[in-house]
Length: 410
Ligand code: ATP
Image 1 (cartoon, protein in one colour):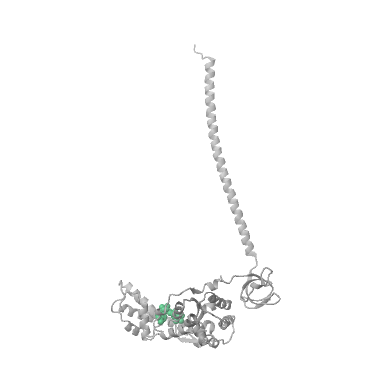
Image 2 (cartoon, protein in one colour; image 1 turned 180 degrees about the vertical axis):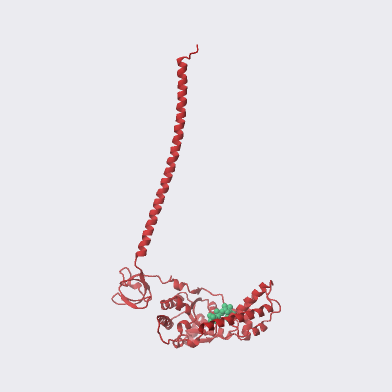
């Protein structure tokens, strides 16, 4: 009584023990899972750290090579002037003087044509490499349009000038046989001269459109300011590009900045301008087989131009572009008002009379200002009073500008 059999006791022990083992196994499995997860996490982290290591190694390599590059001595840029029989070449460096130098063995002699841009070792000035000329950023920054959007119909007045320009530039480009048949040489360069804003640039652009020519515009003052030490080379490359892209028209605006009379060639700046001018003259002289390239220049100051520019074979056709007269002003008003919504009271003849002494550029500004007045009034059309107000405003602002400019010179 009251006692359990030893068999039963054993059975309970076994049950308990196997329960204990199952719990233990579950715990171990859980632990195992946790460890596996931790292992995966650590492996992932290891992978990440290895990647980081590779990344930093790459960065170190890049920084090292950057450092190497920063430490390398700079190369000078020069231009080949001539090649000598013994294999050496004459180069002019961008700083001015010319040197006779040796050439690296890696460069083929035949590639060193005069005008080629090269790099020079800064100590020995040995020619180290040839630079590409076609991708010269200075030249590609010029205004070059395959075709312009100004036609002769957009120009008010200037009928006589248009006729002369067609004769001097359009005919030689479009019908060169007419000149060769009669055996006369077409004018080489045309110089448009007259007050600012009278349509000189427009005329050049319109000829380019009429002849389907590439329009290349270079501005004299920019040559002097931006391309110091490079003016002569740029002139040569512009002519080269014009030949490649022919038919083309080279338009040299503000010719007086490079072509003013040579009084005392004193400062380095003067010498540089002089070099640019000489290059321009020699390019024009060497342009006998110029093919389809027309040269037009413009200036407000023909009186200060160097006589050498005006000799036959250079700018040998002078065309005066005057301030517009009454009928011309009327037609300029009409041209610039073409797209505007106008009231019926607009009298262009009257406006031309009111805008006496105004240039084409002033009239264009008047038309734009009249449009602004109408917008300010909340109207959908421009009326005569807007134009009158605008003429007054433009006149005043140009007077102020004149005072400012005169003040600068006092
Ligand atoms: P600058 O000597 O200052 O360079 P420019 O004589 O070359 O002046 P343009 O640049 O041709 O003058 O003219 C400036 C603007 O004035 C033109 O874009 C055009 O809108 C207007 N303009 C000048 N003259 C005329 C004209 N005869 N007919 C129509 N518009 C004109």
